[in-house]
Length: 181
Image (cartoon, rainbow, N blue to C red; front, top):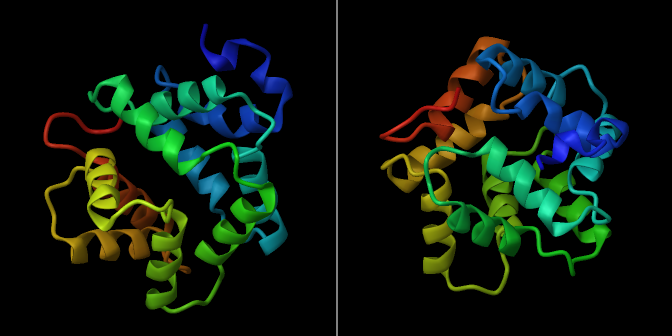
């Protein structure tokens, strides 16, 4: 049974993942992400949202269900689960998650800092080829590395209008076969 039908609405993580239910229209996706990264929110609000999003008390099955729903773009479920299980390994302490995400979204940092923190986020002791394989499987856009960095920086670039966020998000998650909708 889908996670959102198991009382998720009563939990913080449910509040975040509800906008990404597959039956909802694109407008719901955009609204959810606009709320998550709303520029008027203070740093504390960002931290609270991400802590709820990656709450370690949630079971692995819940993570897989919600992320599969979010990134269901035609790839086999096993590929998504393998990549996210490695990324969000439950043995990591909550403090480590918060520290990495706070650094990743720290307001006013230069582009180099964003790239460094993003690399640290995926630093799980695997060789570089393994990172690239997981990243390409998830965000398979056929673009060179520079384009990935540019899109990621543009997605979170402070002060852009909502339309720019939506455009970059669609570019980041599109595939050759199917677009997020």
